[in-house]
Length: 381
View 1 (cartoon, rainbow, N blue to C red):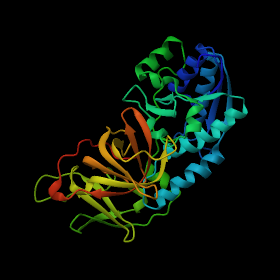
View 2: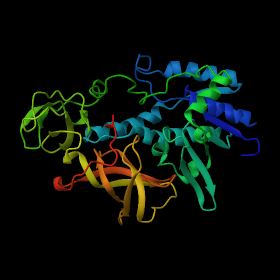
View 3: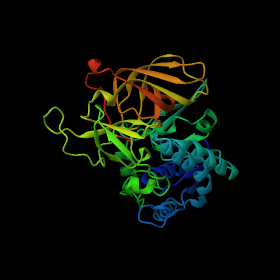
């Protein structure tokens, strides 16, 4: 943007949004900061840092020399994001609330508020890029491959992207911290946020237990042997290793191998667990996903692409098909690990994020066809 514009920046209290605001101010734009409060329940606890984050955001605004407004989106967040989060967990799936928060709060409620303030554009500290073309606006990966956040932004529309700037998307994280330190931003060394505010660093199962009823049941291995009891299918996710409470069962008389959650049998209230990271039940060759969102506004053509089935994962080569009802089918060249219903499958064409959909089901790999998976990832939280 060559001319001076009024830009509203989402200041989270973190270093990425702080540097975004500073870069825009240095470029000569009229910059206004907005701090979004998205959660009110127990936000004064040690687990939710909203109050501390606002103090940090206000300190950043003071150093940069911009106004900052505190805006409460807690009601919208509870209706549009948290309610869906609980519905999905209650159904035994593992949702990704960050994806929904971006689509419904940061680039909808926040964008609408910014437009009412007379903004021409909004900006956030996400590591992604937008590129204007003759056909519309592309969503591109951030230049820092270790920080790219396009996965969480894949549900944004053309209208949303056309009004959005990602100033740090062109930078690496080390450069962002260097800039912050050089200009004296007070949060230059602040630790990156991990997780969503309403959970924070608290034990995840303890948090869910406040909202979802426990429904204990058997924990069975692949041969149907009872190896433990689960607290309720909602409290587990595929690929989970910690917190299963299983020990003392050897496979074939050999060394102990760790146990992983492999399947949920919802109707029977059975949790299936297996031993070994590369057990066939944890590997999938294909998946089906629904509730698709495409950045271009229309489904991409069937063909060869790459996809991620969770955030911190290398792109996996695949073939895309889209059925008459808009559902995606992705068939991968190499088996994928712990493909989890409720998570997002996001499709890429090189550096361009095309869109994605919510995973419904995965197709397991036949035991005789198993090879080591091309890229495994940490289990979803």
